[in-house]
Image (cartoon, rainbow, N blue to C red; front, side):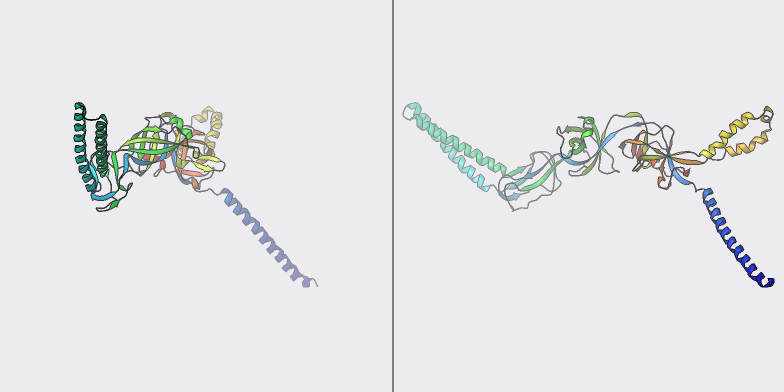
Length: 410
């Protein structure tokens, strides 16, 4: 009877042991996985850095402007006529008063000849009337009539000569002409544009600044102008400041004069304008790549020694002080392991520091709060970092090393 129940009991015991083993294995596996991830160290991230030092800051105001010639016009005809001669070609440099267009003036010339002939007759009539009046045989009214006729004819001749001069278009100043917009034999009505004339020796640039910077702009102030980031900047001076602020944009119009001896600046070009302000010393600056913006504010990552790496050295101080004098007299060989440990590179981590940015200039940003002298700030690689991340400094390629940033190379 007993043997009949032995086999089920054994099977039941085996099932319980197997189930208990599976449960224990699952708990053991989960515990080992948690322990592995809890003790796993993240690999060090490579970052580039910049050591903060106070520098000489040259603040400036940046703006977008448009280049134009200091003397530039679109020449147009004043009277109607047919084009008789075009005595210039495109891109010619012409002197002041040089002829640029001749309209047909044959009718005006003929009218002037007829008017001058009539004027001679009127002068003779006036002289005869005065002679008769002096002899007492001519009335005074005849002299007045003859004089009025003579003056009217002279005025008519002056008008015809003025109309004929309008048939000849002349350069109002020395400059470079553009592409002619008319053809020989073409009939022109008054106001038709003939050609553009631009004086390229001196240019002007018009730009705007916001009203907050109006008190920083002065007459005669130095500006630098460039057509692109790669161009060598041109230098100029502010010559005019609009006294009125545009109420719709809150911007102030400013005009500056720029010399153009090589003729590279052309009217209508886009220009980047930089108004230089007085230099300031002892300013903390960073490359703009170091600054990270978030909903909670602007912050940077500062590289510091890991707290764990600093503890052994701090903890060793009380122990060393408590050692007896006899222990301090140990052989020099006993200190070798400690010296070897000191030669190891310290573990570096990053800390998140919120800062207050100020003015910006080129690739630089001024930091007015939160930055200290000697701080090692991450300038590239922040997208892979979190507070406390382990890092290694690799400055082979560093935004702070570029000459355009204005920072000293590290």
